[in-house]
Length: 120
Image (cartoon, rainbow, N blue to C red; front, side):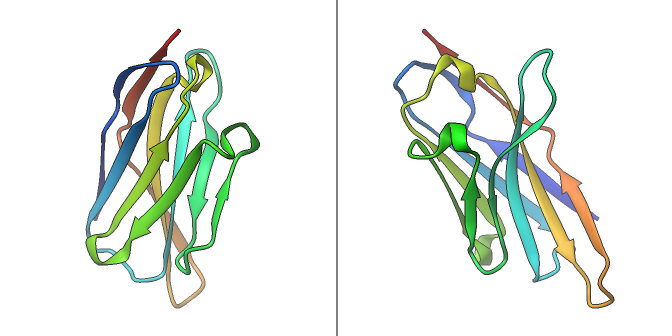
């Protein structure tokens, strides 16, 4: 089993910063991607940032230049640095780990989410 625990969310004023962390534990396979998704009230969950097992990172257009994703493989941890936050960034942020197996299969695991609220 794999568990993901997100932390670092909270209430911040527009223009402020937060750093989210996601720690994975359990039976972690070495080839894995990690990602951050968010879901605002009444909206679908959307991808925010993604980082592969070889540290190739991507960001959705709305956060480029403001957010950065990174990871520490030794700690099985992914980070999301969020700067210049806007009210529209308000959402529950979820962490994903996608693990790849030698037979070509993969499994996704999700955290329970951390709330980010940006006040105007």
